[in-house]
Image (cartoon, rainbow, N blue to C red):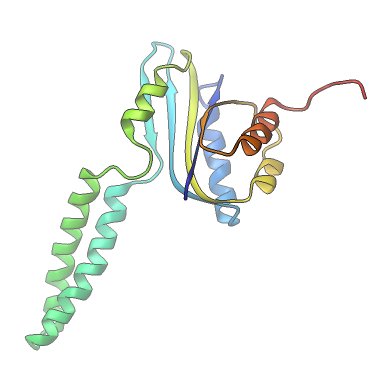
Length: 174
């Protein structure tokens, strides 16, 4: 099961910066991103979405591989596996690209746009849909990130820890 976290930032570039840091954490196997979208609301109030995962490219690659393998198997039946691989690969890549351009995996665009309309002008938000997460290690890597949790599917305890981490260190007597 994946968890959704939406974090708002006062700076229009901050969401993109934090996404790059999440990508570095992904390479360390600290989290597994299903989807990530950066939303920027510019000084004119226009909302711009930046999808981080190119689904058309991903599905075309998957279609090329599966179509190529299926074509090679059919080619074996007709004693020409190379031609079957090429033709099956081309058909599979085309079908995969078409399905990638028509499908919307991950975070629904309508949800992103509706929540993006609520963020202030000249600010940004980061929408993260993640599967495998090691929260303590991730929060330890992001001590200087200041943001506001706008929406989440985390448990109340996890959400509280995230809010506290994003609020920064508290100064209190003790």
